[in-house]
Length: 174
Image (cartoon, rainbow, N blue to C red; front, side, top):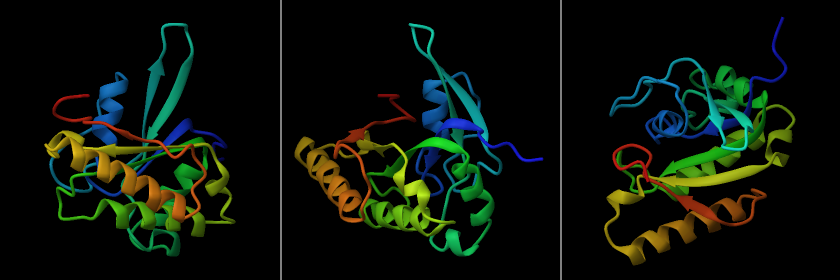
């Protein structure tokens, strides 16, 4: 027996991008959070509660890596969880804290989602979030990275409004 739907929104990102920090900041969920990759080993569900009574379930899924759709790591397991959500929230580390490139990460994440199964997850509603924006001190540099992430997502065929939401889910919670 397998659940058909586990959450309204699935968090898509590399390890240590801030998925668990975001879930903790916007719900009462208490995921394990640490400054190293692969802290999340199993999906965790948090509930967003709005003032008007509306609720949305958000799934924090372990981080994806390049080759996940081909079964690298436990990629198929993690992608299977995302497949059981209604919408996807892509989250990238805008500051490249672990030496990662947020533009390359965005492109790889979209490729993995597109390559998994029949590629239908690419048709789902999407939000794109650039986390750790507080670590980029220059306002112009922040604007430039948000624009560049938007362009990377659009060039890979991601269907969204083009707006990348800059946040700081961990330290400042902005």
